[in-house]
Amino acid sequence: MGEGDFGADGTRRITECRLCGSSDLSEQVDFGRVPLGNNLQETQASAQTAEAYPLNVTRCGGCGHFQLGWAVDPRLLYATNYTYLSGIGASFVRHFEGYADWAIENAGLEPESLVVDVGSNDGTCLKPFKARGMRVCGVDPASMPAGIANENGIETLNDFFGPSAVDWIVERHGRADYVTSHNVLAHVDDLKGTFAAIHSLLKEGGHFGFEIGYFREVLRTGCFDTTYHEHLDYHTAAPLVRHLTGLGFDVLDLSVNAVQGGSLRLLLKKTGEGLISADAQAFLENEAGSILHDQDFLTSWKPGIDEAMTRFGDAVRERAAKGDRIVGYGAPTKATLLMKLAGLGAEEIACIVEDNALKQGRFMPGSGVPIVPTSTLETHAPDALVIFAWNFADDILSKLKGRFEGVEAIVPLPALRIERP
Figure 1 (cartoon, rainbow, N blue to C red):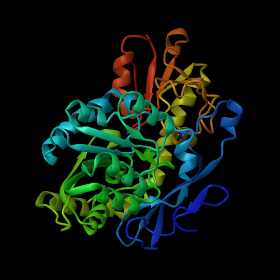
Figure 2: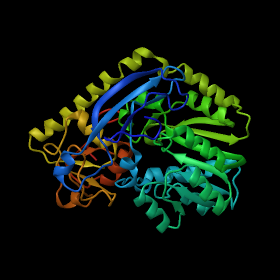
Figure 3: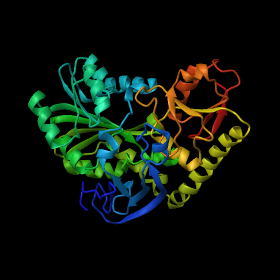
Figure 4: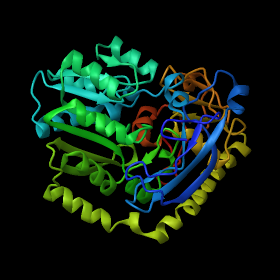
């Protein structure tokens, strides 16, 4: 099957590197068959029998790029039942405010500059650009978040990003001064085509700034739960730079921040030259000496995950065996993999509280744990909380401080910790 062709089960084996095209792929970790993390169900029975798909990570021997070994049809992933909203996490909203200021300063943006967000979700990233006088336009295939963005005055094309979306934007607004994307360019099925379309959308001299999960940080911190079917690629700097300079982008800056367990931020300029700044070159040299190239470390990665998940599962089961009422906090995509690997389900976890109204009233795929409003905590106090949205743990613990006497909070990652809010 070729790019975009899926079998009757909705999957396609990935046999070539999605960046350089090499067929020299070696498996790094195999999580088995896992349900789609965002495929929340309307009944517990349908959740417990939800379809599961292969989830493994391979590495390219040609350029070093990490990617999934199987792709799932994006129509199953995004178009109908996708409920993630960028604006739910307060720390993420603050991050986008700072990001807008950084982009305006480093890309020389001015009022009326056109900023386009690829995979714009509910428009949270574009709001601060609009507030600073920019023209903005988002593109996102998920109907619910795109609808929310449009309702809030952030023009959003509800479609997959590609040549037709570029034509639509150019016809309405002209070419972009700045294209951005956040934690999305690990998701797209046609990665090379998406980069080419972004290059086409930009003006000559326009800038492309984006953030994606940095696989070096995933390995360093042990935050493996960013591995799920939406994330087809597990990016590092060197393979990206090799591909993007080949398209004609100059690489102006590479940096790392703490968002989503560790993200890589790139700033590029459309020039046709493919130059790399001195600072970016220094970053690449540092990466070349990192754990990404330590085969002993890579070999020990999966056993380390298994050990961590056994400790996490045991901590929850120990409390369940005492009759404690255990409630999860947050139903992010990652929770599905965490529960599968830790062997947790509805027998141990009574429910998961969630701020996102689109997820409330549904059930977690695989485990069948019900998702309820956060207000449930006030009427049915827990004995212990499992914070599945661990990347927002500090925000959550701050909100809970002093509200539930004697309650323990279990935070599974980056390292298991148990504390009283």
